[in-house]
Length: 392
Image (cartoon, rainbow, N blue to C red; front, side, top):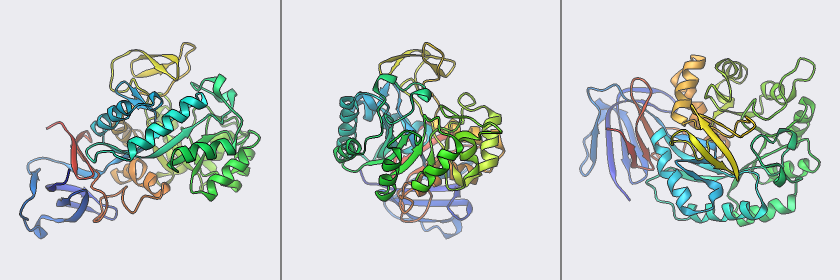
């Protein structure tokens, strides 16, 4: 679907400045002009969205690099219907792009999910949140820190198996979560570095020293900080201490107050600042649905008061919406809107190597835009130039 859209009377957060009383011109899927109302020439053939009389902010669409499911669907379902359901649900929370995230399962299930995802990506409509690649979470993890990843499917790092999977995924695996202390992981991490795949430490019992050693091989990312990793101790800083202490590491955080308390989020922000944190949801299929009993990788998950747990009480993903994570990080840390944009859009785009087309409101980039009201609630989401969600 192609269209011409003019948004006017809006405060625009570009990559370099804030434009009050501004306008954005969108043609087909791209941003073609940005400016102040004084500079605006009303063009022919444009649908006009006039936001005068309202206090509306335009920010870049959110990019979720770690999400398993939403609205009753999961990437591991391995169906186009599941991915479609996710892709049309996510704009409601401001997400315009995401990495479809797998989990530790049988080889057959993982391969089905990989094939299904690349098939869906090849013909995905521009009217929904765009799948920009795959995040392979597991199965090369440490059973000691498995969390909600099924132990029976955990494997040793296996480069030949990964190559097979990435060929099946047509090179679309962009990020891999693994335990760097497990034998064989260094070979994988070096391969990732040489093939522009992000190597992330997660579900890991690594020491601080082991993380530092993995960084030399190419480790550059930390999966859901604090959760299912060796914590900080004053004589063994662990994964958490290494994450805080190494500026080379980009660090995910689930800012929901459950997986990470307000105070833990504050400390992470103080240590890493906005240029090295990425807001994620790690959400499962129960997001957008009522409390109840759901499935995660063949395991029963109970959701109550937005908290998802296995029978033994282990946290099993989240029900967080990224728009709420955006609001939470501002509330928890008192950071600026610009800092929150870094953590919700810009950093992910830069790390994934797609900043030339996503991650900021800039002429020539994809028109992935979120409109927020004065309370920072998502009121409209535009995916590649198309209004994918509006509560107006």
